Amino acid sequence: MYIPLSERLERLTRWLDRKNDRPLLGFTLGSYYPLHRYPDGSRRLPQGAVTPEDVVVADYLNDTDRLFREHEEAGGDYIFSAAPFLGLPWIEGSLGCGVEADHTAGSTRSIPPAEFAQNPKVPRFSAENPWVAKMLEFVPSLEARSAGRYPVGVTLMRGIADLLSALYGSEDFVLRMYDDPQEVHAVVAQLTEYWIAFGRCLLDHLPSFHGGTGSFSYGLWCPGQMIWLQEDASALLSPALYEEFIYPADCRIAAAFDHVVMHLHPTRLIPSRQLVETKLAAIELHIDNHGPSAEALEAHYRTVLERKPLIIWGDLTRADVEFVFTRLPREGLSVNVVVGSVAEARELWERVARLGGTK
Image 1 (cartoon, rainbow, N blue to C red):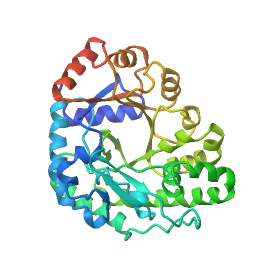
Image 2 (cartoon, rainbow, N blue to C red):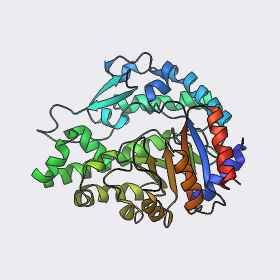
Image 3 (tube, one colour):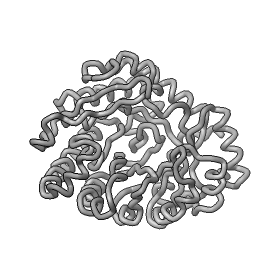
Image 4 (tube, helix red, strand yellow):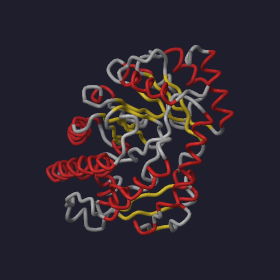
């Protein structure tokens, strides 16, 4: 079940071109919640308000090595990647949002700046911003710890709808689209420029790994430069509001980099038909606990697979696994399953092999 790195690099390259001879299969072990996933790194983060000075990069290095060892032991087609700690809202913090840690939940959240709703101004991007500088501080330390064993890749970057939600508030940004669409269009344009500048700055600092880029917890690697775009807050929008305010920004971001992969949850709005028309390199669609099954999402999977590589990530049930590996086209299909142990990963690999999915 252990696949040599050279073979994984080749498989991921073929997958990106939708020329893979079988679906890719890999695993995410342990808690998805980042403060629990990085217990050494997050131990000095205070409960409540967090500042860049609270983040001690050296604390995260042992956690990173442990996660790498677990990933390699579980096996599969994916490539573990280190990254600036994915448990912090780097872009939101750099935009002026407050950042709070909740150690019980295992995650952090951003707090809207008090003045933004009354005076909506997006700052000019600067690598000297304290949150940006702290994010970049991770890169050389992770590169030295890796010593060529794993890539140092991109971190979690929330997209334009998510940033609007962070700046205005989770519901107020939708109301503002109705009350003052001209203002929101202007903010979206500024945020899009900011996001692109932020992403280019990060990529400019990352070391190349076998000619490509890795990506935080999803285990993806792409030749050239790659970045991730998350649009969770689009779930709060109607199709018309997404089309008017967010889709043009997603198109601009998709065209601004070599490879952009978008993360979506299977919520009320899944704009699969619009997104396959963009220059996105691939689309990742979650399977959420208590969310729609893989079979219920078949139409969206097929829409994506006709035009783009697809990553299915999450808590797949036995029924989900059987459906994905027996009913969907294999070209462009990639599956990353959350498992509780190495033994569970190995059992799942053998089960998929019996279905003909890993041969």
